[in-house]
Image: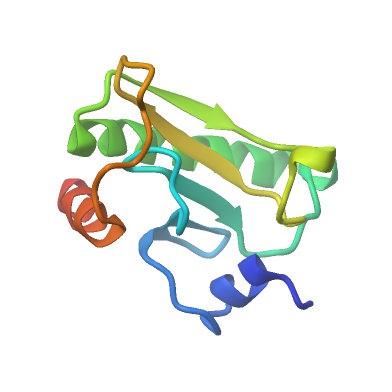
Length: 125
């Protein structure tokens, strides 16, 4: 498969990995919307959420419940949005869940360097 997330999960492309197990990886988004913007990606290729079975779907949610609050704490966010794009809005056709910290303002765009935010979050994990 010539998918960028498949290459990342096989470590053919480097990424800032926050968490990894046999089924998924949590990585920093390389083009973040906000500080702390992370992605949960299954290691197995699923084009979109309609292809998921209940086991992997449940596991993704478990990882989100574990990692999400830690990201929020690390970047001092007030809340967190989980987002799955589908159809035209899905730019990479490999299922991924966005974890988007919310800072309680309209200007939530990323301000810090990804490397700095990555190090802050890794300390919380």
